[in-house]
Image (cartoon, rainbow, N blue to C red; front, side, top):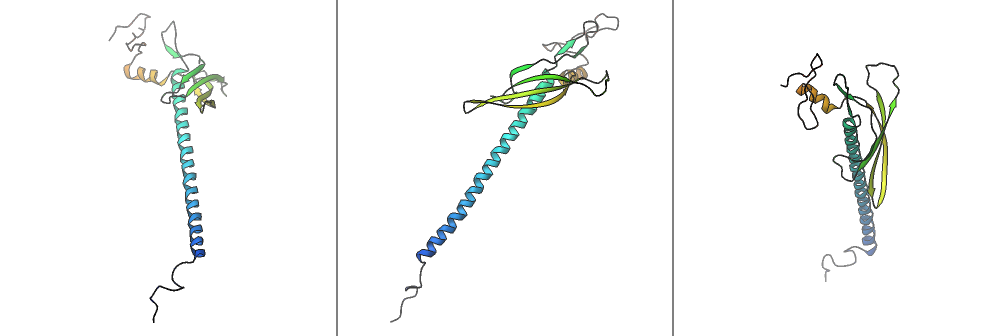
Length: 182
């Protein structure tokens, strides 16, 4: 009598072969899962760094517009950038939960050129709360004392200055009186 094909001792896997295959599969899956978690951690770090860079950029843009208040010369009526003021606990524009404080200190110019704007080192501290604890990050930026960009643009486009409500201010006439309103 002949044996049926596939039956007998040679057909199938031994328990050692099955355990060895399962071990190799486990090793491969562990490596893949390790790579996935490492990639997720890198993506999270990159996302946090991008958010931090965006917050720092928002802070610097806000500082450029607000740290040097506009000062009005009493004799000519000309508006110029005044001395910087300290900022404490201001919310970062576009980033709820982040607040910053800033303090400016003058930086001596290498050459005393009266036409060049005064430089200031602005030390900024950004603070937030995570897991019930207050965390901070400090950075410094170099800013020039000049009329804010929005005011310069307003002067260029409108040919004059606006008051706080957006109404056009009269230009000073050459003789010291008011010029006619447009």
